[in-house]
Image 1: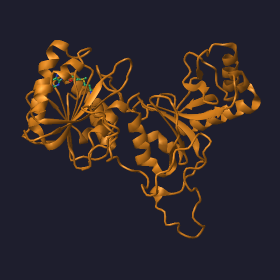
Image 2: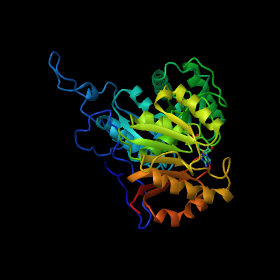
Image 3: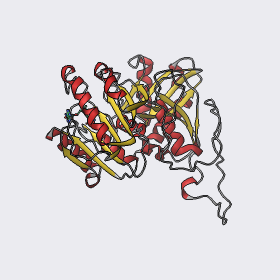
Image 4: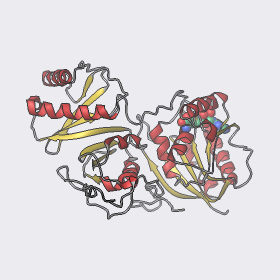
Length: 410
Ligand SMILES: C[S@@+](CC[C@H](N)C(=O)[O-])C[C@H]1O[C@@H](n2cnc3c(N)ncnc32)[C@H](O)[C@@H]1O
């Protein structure tokens, strides 16, 4: 198994890099392309094979159907490299990254079928980007610019035909100014929908770009990262994209015996199976209501049969030594669940038990916002875990830390 790739590491503390084991939905052949600016042309050779002759291409790497468009994928700041890695791993032949300066985002030209992008697991919000070389938004009211904006919005609406949109909303500084109001009203009119600037769920974002204004048309009536399997929002549950990120950081492989300690509502378990098959998937929590939430969510995901759920205390688990290849835990942060007072001993005892049931050189992915309790683990960790890397990211005002350990001999 390959270990996670690492970016430039600071001495002592290594940033966890995007994993190299991600599944590929497209051919990985072909040289790596240079990133181009927004005006760059096709990232791949779009020519179809000659009629009547086999092009030699398989279904998986058939030529792109859409003209390349510029997209913006938003991840949580600190997780953008994982999204970039997912794009490369799955759509390499059709993706060209575009340099930009915004944190938490990936900008890319994509020449494949737009709908394939809906399956991105590490993208929180996906938008189609168009750049206008105008100094002020007022100029966007010209018929030509309005037509281009409407065309983009129609394109993103076609990607999710089952979505019903309640109205158009502008996401822009000064969105209640007379110019923005006119823009919103006119665009909405052309789409035969109402302009609902507070509550609309077709979102058009406008922001200053490097050379004018960037206009972003959001895909879907909810952020792309919203999971349809989420039926029960149990206390402290992770977003689907963060759960998917933890799975990636575990360097998953098809035969893994995967254990999610303190599984709560099952987010990590479901995202592990969304990644692909495993040798076994088990979730443990000591609260019946949490396991019930996990049951409902995994049923909604169509995965109930493939996930084993168990009520147990992570300090004393009914598993034999070395039972698992990959372990993952989203520890109580000491806010809505747990307390700072009890976390230190809970973390320590959970680590000791995790060490027992993890196979040698198995991986343990740990997430928490309680930095003090994590740091207090040093003594325990030194005796049996090697820290492979650490990263933090920003989420709703929190800055949780994620560490990846490997079990050593001692
Ligand atoms: C932060 S939540 C996990 C949320 C989960 N990742 C999700 O997305 O729903 C922590 C979970 O740890 C569980 N927990 C706390 N102490 C535990 C213990 N000693 N043994 C097992 N589970 C425990 C709680 O019941 C809670 O569901």
